[in-house]
Image 1 (cartoon, rainbow, N blue to C red):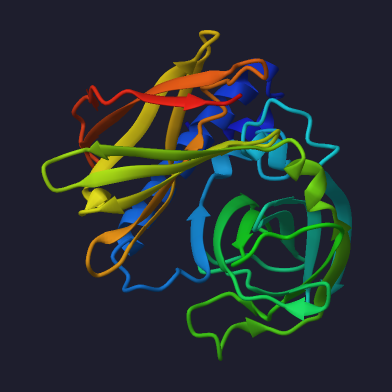
Image 2: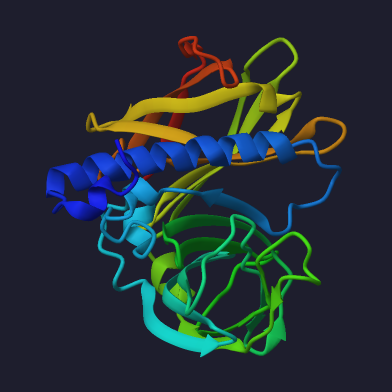
Length: 327
């Protein structure tokens, strides 16, 4: 199948779903491999973690990288919780547009688009930013997923994680740094002024949140253990935080089960960090595309599943039952 096949036909709603599933599978595989690669970094957060997804043949998957709700497969209407911005700035031959932004506790999630007015992008394209919240510059670590829509357009979903949660009405200023279009920054550095300013209210989403403290230890192997410490869910997404010991990056781990109303729940690795002593954390996020927690559910029952990372073997189910009381 040629890369431009989808550019020449009208994509049906059913095919859109298939395309988005294919893109999401590629995204998850790339994110997981990236986390494994960096998981043994020594006691520092990863800054500017960029993952490039070349998806020319998926270019017509409707709003996949433009809509935050679509990207995270949220079944809920996020209009009440996100800022729809749609602001564009052109400079230096490049136009950057911020489409949407949403704050989830200490995370700022931004959908943006970069368009070259002339020429094409290289795979080394990077989008880095200085971020001010209420006029205060904040340090962060980040993940960035990039999708090449066509030869001159790149869509981006960036997640910026700050040390502390944002509260109340927050003024966000994003100052994009010179665009790097090649590893040799002194040769291919595009200067320009792409400064954006907008307001978000994190408390609106926070009001929908449920937090449950957990204290459950799961032994994945004889030398790899995981302690579940917190469940947090809101209208955007649900996560389970854990602390780990042992090289959990050698495993592919999921938490699978259901809510008490019979809805399937599957939590997959969202973030993984280990220090040089193989101690760290894993955050699991609900796979919204294949899961659903009913708003009337009062509990979750989950089981850990694991296998060797990147192997073709089946997941092994562990008998450690995990019960999370939501209400």
